[in-house]
Image (cartoon, rainbow, N blue to C red; front, side):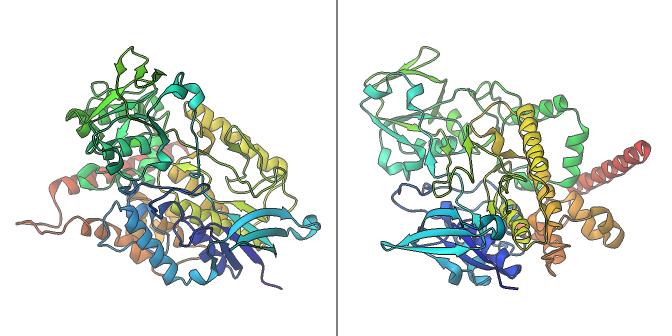
Length: 537
């Protein structure tokens, strides 16, 4: 049988594992990357370029290294738990070098079109036209992985802001923001309280004369540093706590979350309290935001009512004069300009994808969209699981169900999100981290069997169940099993602590009463849970 050729569009955080997974499955990948380097979104550049993702110089990732690492390539223990964008790039380069991915990438190559071959219903093949150095080339591939992400097209809703056309100051989207030096001693208004809006506002607050952060609905604010100093996602993204969340009434979870966040700082007193409950919309990560507010560097404001030539008037009637710049941190739209509408249809920022990967209307399942989602957690390991499944579909090892079954799954997920979340621009892209990781890993046949682990390897099972649900868990069994997965899981806490414990304090002990007490409580919860299961069965 001939080796199937797979085209991969994009060499960023989704495209790199796509190359590696294709090689693992004996496929022949060719990756097209329009930049001159890998990294996609995480490649910092001084200037923005149309059609390409962009980040600012100070950006630090808000998911910790153990939770964002590719499943068979842990991030070194001396790397910080939350990495600067340059360190993320270092990790990507190490990953690409270790697995020999660079020879499969065609840099400075733009994909112009991806169209079905005339005999697509029989072969499932695609014709791809690319352009490099002014020269166009046509090639035929057996399958396509689209790994272009969804942070490329800035969403700039100027029509919703009366008077914006007569405003004489600078207007830009956060996509164009690079560093605070360009705004020294200026008066700035930031519109939008997402992760980027909050982070850039804090970044600017050290350089500007004054900055106002305008929000329409407010937000709950998380801190990267959680209980006992561990990273937030390491603390809360565990299988054990995920079960507890499902067993606990939603109203109690909301009350618990809001009380915990308000115990750090009262969101109402800081002008941040949202109109929605804790679990009805993704919170933001903003470690320094309350510090900047309490020290007066940032002033919170409600939604903008209108603009004048030099001022901004807010919905509460307050007015700020002599505004030099307005930055819109209003998110992104997405599209696939190289694909025909008959292949991918985008309506109201929604695309129908089975398992959030496969277009259900294709005669042959030879195209997959990777990373088109917004998890409450890291996207890298999710993208890796998606391509592991897609590669096996391309090989014919996994069969997709009929179209009506796939569409029923798509509709069900839309209804679930509409019930769970308040309406937002990308409500249908949102997924819960552990639930989706388990769903897509079950599809690929690599989800760990925790009960089986408890019978065979209790020590490992304990860490898998009570410890952080790290990507390495999905290399314990099934296709692509990694021999060092057990060792990597059992040493993950060591890697977490190593990055911060750069000085040994006096009278140091390996265990302390609080950690032992917490372990005891976890044991009690674990026993109680199985007692409940036993009773109901």
